[in-house]
Length: 171
Image (cartoon, rainbow, N blue to C red; front, side):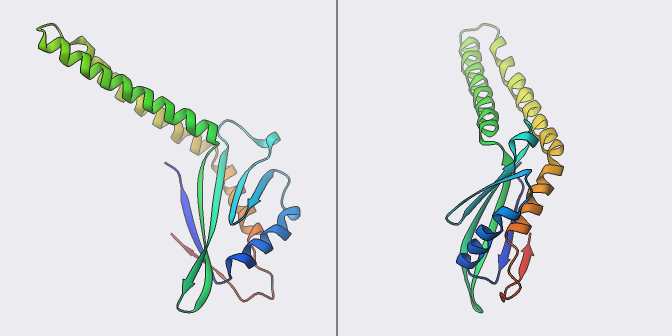
């Protein structure tokens, strides 16, 4: 549900972060970037942001290999944290409704009554499927902005010409 990627760089993490900090002013104005330690958050600027706009969270770690030092860049796309919290809250509420329907339906059944409360289980399941489909539709609506954020990250992490490092993409 949340697309992710990983890059391996042959440059140490401190050099990658220093290069990123120097390139911050050169980025497009439609992307807002926050850098803290070895973590980078990229999101669309307020004037370009919609309800379905993605949020790219990137962590850069040290990577020790046989060839020497390097770094690993791990990124994960997702909705704005408030949207993610709302989606998870809806899923939890629907699961709770299904469990309540199950408990009440079993109680009705053991008392010899019609267990009409069991209908809450398939209804909650269908509603959860609907929420999932809406989230997939939101991903499709925000696809072009995902590419914009990835392009901004690529520009931000570009290595200086005198550095001896190259990017290797691994799925």
